[in-house]
Amino acid sequence: MTDSTPSLHVQPGPPDETSIEQRETVGLSQGQIVRKRFFHHKGAVVSIFVLAFVIVLAFSSVGLHVWGLNTAGWWPWHWNATPPLVNRGFPTLNLIPGPGFGIGPHPFGQDEIGKDIFALVMRGTQQSIMIMVLVGLVGTGMGVLIGSLAGFYRGIGDALLMRFTDVIITIPFIVVGAVIGRSVGAAGLGAAILGLALGLFAWTGLARLVRGEFLSLREREFIDAARVSGASDARIIFKHILPNAVGVIIVSATLLMAGAILAETALSFLGYGVRNPDTSLGLIVAQNVAAFATRPWLFWWPGVFIIVIALTVNFIGDGLRDAFDPRQKKMPSAKALLKADARRARAARASSTV
Image 1 (cartoon, rainbow, N blue to C red):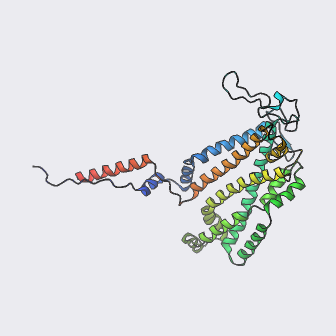
Image 2 (image 1 turned 60 degrees about the vertical axis):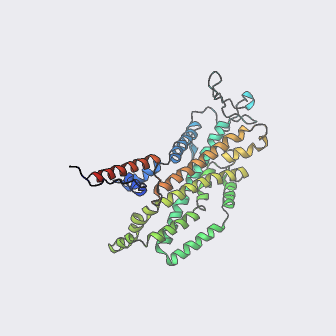
């Protein structure tokens, strides 16, 4: 006897993209989800390794010279040394495989008086990275402090802090850097002082963003529950609101650091940033602007390092934004969609045979 009940043929519908996304993060903590999302951003992961390589190369090659600390590097030339011209100052680097491959004594070439461009670029990269880090730390610290206090307490405190922020915004950022750089640019601590000074005026945009996040988060139900349970203001800020605003803070900090690199380069190019006897990437370009037609490699190498540092920091910030923003939804790949479609088809066939 055969079963006359017609079998059910269920056509697999479109895959449930939400279930695919949730299935990838089930059982993971918030920190694990953030790391998983970040490492899925190939540009950010590659940028971390590239930026780390640039930092290690810069600080190991010519040594560290700051705040009275002087360490020797593995590169034989100092950035202020003037060895004899080799190969008429042309770069000795040759990346062609075979007999022509070689680095030579001056792979990036020499300027008109014989200074090694590789040593100059490495020292300039050190200065740019130092300024970038200082601006990031100082600007982020002040922006988070002022923005969080204004957004959490509101009232007269919010009004005063925001009016103070408006006053700082009216002060031209480039003028502040020019005045400070003109005063301390030639000193041994010129880059450090310039970085601190720029950081003291670079926090305004971050403060506004943090204030907006705090104004939104302080009205959420979990904050009301924390207040009812007797949590202090400090605990609410540091344990409940700040962790939820860390995505905006980190992304804004990376953008601030990338902007600091370009600001330092512009100031040094104009002669108001780091100055002789020290050097920076912008100063290298400014000093050799007259040789653009005859010795273009004097611009290639500092320009490449400026672009690489700024791009890697921006890519890292983009990856952190995708990782921390809970509204970011990764579209399933074609392979994941096919797997989901196959699972739905198998489930439909299994239900039809019951």
